[in-house]
Image 1 (cartoon, rainbow, N blue to C red):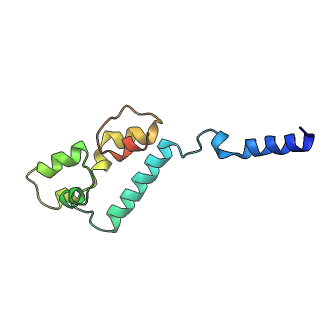
Image 2: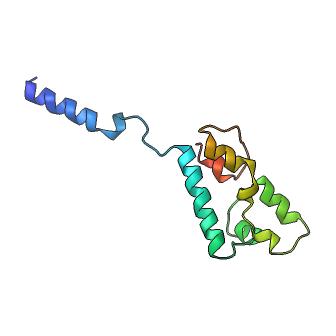
Image 3: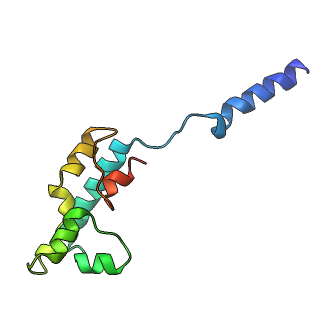
Length: 111
């Protein structure tokens, strides 16, 4: 094999993304970004109600399910429950937090 061919094969192998380590954004960054976007969305107007969220095909986390069955008004059911959830804070501070709620976006960011 010529030196030139060997040089190019080595250069292409180093530039190949398949050969590189996983270059995805860290879960902490995804969590912080999601929190800021959800906060900005809540400030710009009312959020979808829990019933509307569920009807659109999205799963509800543990706390949203509790709020869905709670006998409170519609204003209560349009809150951003992530703001009060411990999973949000753990996910923003740790790369692999010990949270396992189903349908939690912060758990999904860990995958």
